[in-house]
Image (cartoon, rainbow, N blue to C red; front, side):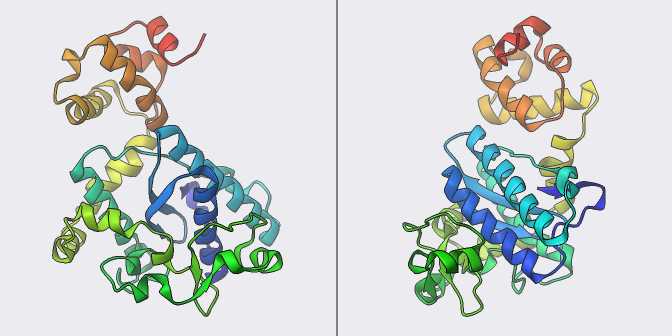
Length: 282
């Protein structure tokens, strides 16, 4: 989720804290699991486990909706977050997963902070002791309705969550992030994790995760991007895909990339009517 045209999402510590809590609440509402997150002044990233692409996108839209309400109420600036862009991208290879997880944590550098000391990311949730994972702290499930309103800005019951708050009333990342998923992604090897984190090519990951999905590409660039996805999904070139596989690929491309039915038809070697039918449009 990114504030376009230099829209600042978080102006002070209360905004950062609120946005992280809203990530948790919206994940709970939309039945997705947060693996890792990072919030900086004008954007945030979260890697989640979801049953499907639509659920992941619904989570992102819910975060935008709920945080827009917070922002409007706090600053009296209604409509300010209309220029906030939300994208949900499927991480469909081991390489993509590991590099995206590392890239998210590296966003602390955007706020001029060390990755391992930044308070508004999930870094402290991983490769740590069980005590640090949240055995200490107050259980959110034991809060009164008034406390949930005050501390978490929600009226949701949250009676079945394992989240915990520290002494400052902030959520403890290890109590809600899926640390096992991330650690297994790096073969339970902290050195491998740190090496990937330190050896990131942030420009490449920004292009893959942020710029390509948001900007419409010319046909030649778009074809190359789709061909790369075809190679990842099916280990074959786009030109060799069956209609069945193209049918599976089209909705994903429509959700995750800025494109048009005409461009999709040209790229996939279909006519526009076929594309419209596959996408469920009349």
